[in-house]
Length: 476
Image (cartoon, rainbow, N blue to C red; front, side, top):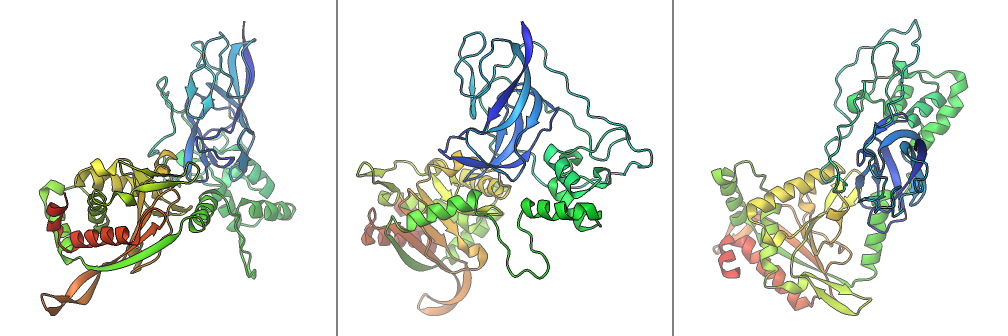
């Protein structure tokens, strides 16, 4: 006999062995009808912000955690009201069989309920009587705060996804309450804010937490709401009140992971850094010709593109820089492929996503991969898969006007190259002093894996290619 039941979805380990994640934003609200694998939330792991698909098809019954909360793996974060047999198995993801005793189809974030062929619960009504004296506010088009198209969605192979439930803008017709999530409604209640007066800047007019806080900052609160407002605003994030001499921000997410990884790398691998300053005028001239070429029309070419290609070519003759020290097994792991990591500064901290099998790519393919990688990282949509498995990395400090540095190895890699700024400088050229375009290369490597001679010869070959791109013919 078919019956309605409540099933909890517990925060899963997203395949990284992590113990906690932060709820960044909910994509659904209580009462919404969702389909299997529909994106329900954005969560921040120790490496990136990823999208969390629903393991059930049904109606959202409760959201157990607010955005900004760090949740341990295994804790309930959302409950669903679903239709199923009375004898259906348990509420926690991870059960291995469905109600019929068959194997449950897994998705990436754990084992969810099998999508029922029967009807789905109807969406609950979300209307109420509007105050007679409150006129409708005209909504103005505002750019959404977050990108809505994921670069690398966390989805599982399975049934085709249905379109998300249509929602109404925040400033809708009389009789409908403004669209927002339960945590935002609670925040507004605590602050004494009438959501009817707030203009939503989120997706499709969704009122976000920032909208409420910004509204508070621009208006006067009732006296009874002032104390809760202070407490709630402080919990929402780092706030510096007038006259305060310091601001405290919790260490979590990407920055926490990066700090731990850098400390482990710095105190585990014996770092050596070598520097080489190169006249890259021929490379910059080649870059200008390629940009003007019809064959490369539509491709984004930068000095990083050409240096990346040169690194991949140089590694063919110096494979020791593309390796890993396996302490547990007392082995040196030599990679016969190159997953090229590119350090990317994002609002959430430093990340090093990598391009899989970059050594097999043409210059055009490499250009496209670099553009996609940087755009995705800046949008905070890098997938966990892209952040693991790197074999060697490049960091472009030249974009900040820096000439050289001593980069710290990405854990598990033998080398990292830092590119300095390209500067016009007086330089010896054909036995005369001329104004040339010069770049400094900084190569850090793990001295357990790479001897000084090996690191020096790699850097020498790389510099030779950048000083005279024609040298590539002698390298391949």
